[in-house]
Image (cartoon, one colour):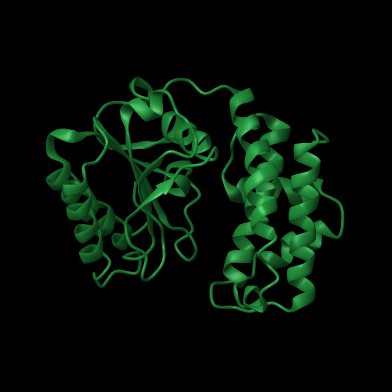
Length: 261
């Protein structure tokens, strides 16, 4: 199930620690993302989990969870700071309302557990767990997460692109974006997946969506996607390339939001 020993160590450590902290308030722990979809890349992928609670995490348990994650991030393991997860109560998953806040940990050195709003994109995350999630603890996720229709999946993608992505791309005026080649690769791949999802009514892994896009999209986007596969974290891009990615974001977001895809 695990691609290497480092992933197995981090997942095992997280599983034991989360069970210890949450105890009776724990409903289930599930792997999602690339590990669940079978396209984990040891060089670029992170470890994604969904933790389902019986009740909303208390402030006391939040403090204990935050300290636990801080300790795990100090491990001598390449994925110690490459973990993303959320602690969501069962009632919220069964009647999900975007923009409610729950404890969330994002990947990256220096990241800490925090209360954060979950957007409409989490409909896609719940679908992934329900249909492909790997159970680490608890029952089959299909017994906890209600069915999610193709229309709901496509609607979530349209909403995220029309709101979050167009708002986010407006922050790219800063020159610092040219030093985020790894992040720009994530952007390009995510847009490919958005186009695939809207066109097919189902969510795919990013690698599968990239392969589809390379066979489907016209130039100059096909060349941009091909080039993006060589970008790595810490790399830099020139201003012209960042501008082209921005144009790709705006084109995809506009086409999807207007129903042109």
